[in-house]
Length: 292
Image (cartoon, rainbow, N blue to C red; front, side, top):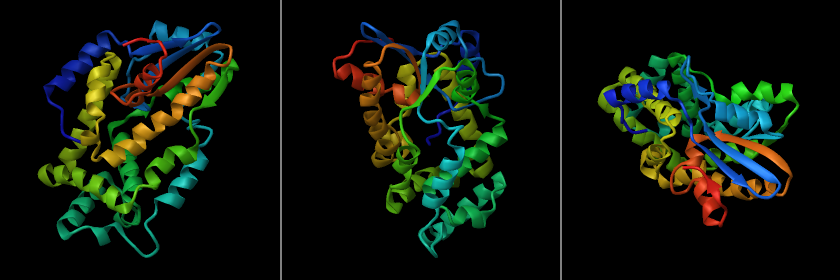
């Protein structure tokens, strides 16, 4: 993740809070209407993201689709993460790091309160997710859009659908080669080495706040500029967590058009922004998708 935040982040956050309107899109045919809205999975406390338009789309929806039923499949996600996320037998992350990189990783783990022996046996992708969880906890981030809507879907009796399986979501990361994973890790460690663990954590939190602000303001173009191969560390990593998954989702969204009724699709905002977004792919296939 690149360091991007200045006072602009605070300005954007305050402006967005005044007029919060996350971007939405509409895809429809003669008997089906699909509304798509970008989401953020974890949010700063007190974030006001619900709008009349989002609430209406939810109210009229017969079916609500998330990337994954993250609540119902929490045990499955945890099991697969541990099975796929541990280094090969007998190996440690530090086997692949030089002395300076090892000390940087130890400093980051200590700052977050993560036992270093635990993170040292993880593959970089799993260690990265673990660090993100600890950073989110330190920042006090709360459950985001999907987690708020999930109990409402169950209570209302709406059909819940998923755009991918646990294997597809985690497999995108867990099948990356160790060489590629360490390439992404080293991109982050350059910044860690420059500014130190505490400052890096603060920077991550500030960058996240900026992205939330852009999402609240419906600034799809700026979000797209932040989800590029360069920003994410490598093209292979970008392809795994965004491009390939977006391609998989498009035919599943097309299949929803074959059903009659109203559908709300709520997925991470990064999947709906940029040149490789789900929106762009649908439009490239000739669909009229109304929205930004």
